[in-house]
Image (cartoon, rainbow, N blue to C red):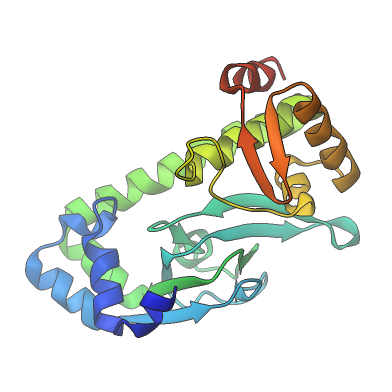
Length: 238
């Protein structure tokens, strides 16, 4: 993040546009240049809101650096995490393209950088570049498939299965540290619970059980996956 603070807006946006996983890779050099000149960058400290539920979307937001949780507030103010974002993924796109207000909030879970392009600019590019349209549709369809699977998981699996799947999801989303076992994201027990649709006390208790069974190892907010096969089995059995 310190390095990002020293970068110019053009450099940050250029990295987003030309990232190997970016949907913008299909744009022509001229279109990329136009897009780069029409993107704005924002820096967020850990815990800061990127957007809030009920607000009108300001544009298509692409995460350039950091990690973000997207959540809805339920009964009694309890959060339900519906997505976790990583670079260079989109956030807040559903409300933007539906031309509605946000139905969820996004918060940086570590220092993060976003690049935003206006709705008008995205529509212009979509109308003139069919490959971009298809690229964005594929991205949205993949996310929809994940959301459908998560709905089934959170309603049909038992606590152990839900928590195991959440840990595997975090691993698949953010990867491991250099040691090859520590999940590269450090969530609070409350966030892990909100991701798994359970109470914080149940999350703490189940994590401790996994640790006693040798499935994981816990060091504060750091979680190491010790037995990948067993964790995957617990997730599948539900």
